[in-house]
Amino acid sequence: MSGSSGLPTVVGMIETHDLTKRYGDRTAVDRLTFTVRPGRVTGFLGPNGAGKSTTMRLVLGLDAPTAGTVTVVGRRYAELPAPLRMVGALLDAKGVHGGRTAHQHLTGLAASNRIPRRRVTEVLDLTGLTEVAGRRVKGFSLGMSQRLGIAAALLGDPEVLILDEPVNGLDTEGVRWIRTLLKSLAGQGRTVFLSSHLMSEMELTADHLIVIGKGRLLADTSVRDFIEADSRAHVLVRSPEPERLRDLMAAMGATVGLDARGGWRVDGLDAATIGELARVHGLAVHELTPVHSSLEEVYTALSHDSTEYRTPQEAVR
Image (cartoon, rainbow, N blue to C red; front, top):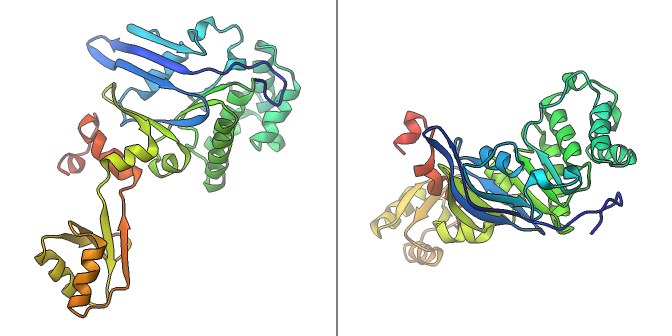
């Protein structure tokens, strides 16, 4: 397969097998085995300290594993003959020489991997940086730095993309742009692997999830299956006589609480039962909506015991 720049590319996967990394007596990554496949956006989730960044560094050969293996396109990253043409990565948006302009930074990267200079113009335009290409990077905002990092990751028109928190610092328009871009790249058959703490955005962007906690694999499944397998369904109820309806539902064993959107959040009764209950007692109902848990709710419940850093308030939830 070759991309729009005409560069030769190779369809490939990211594969780890019993990947382990220890720092002294602390195990940051613990026997991780998973595969990131082409043609879909794979989200990489885990609490702070879970080992996500360490895992990405291991994939890119920036750290050496204590045990196990990790390959990209069937090889260790260090063995790739032209890394930027096969793997594009963004780990630290500010990891750029501040005295260089965006154009100089990308031109240097292109020369290091024999990438045509025209590709620099293409990625500057793609990431919306054409007008600031001649400005020194030290004056860039975090959002602009993120766009430059994404431009560098895309420079070699690679088949594999590894992005650590790519939406950090982007405004609403920028977040929507990166979401559309990543989906488009996955749709072309590329392998897209990204981490993010924004669960709402991950739910909109990712097709598949790899979830880790304390360095260990917690889940490797599609977003839909992840939510459905661990979701707690509830019903959102609104009525002009809320207290009376609440008492009736509670009397039937339901757990009733205020919903952030207004109305009652009801667990333990389905919508049909609540509707019939209201009818029998002559109560009007303005809304009766079955609701499944969000990715954030399911993820928080799953990862709670694997969270290394927690405030006192979070610890007693």
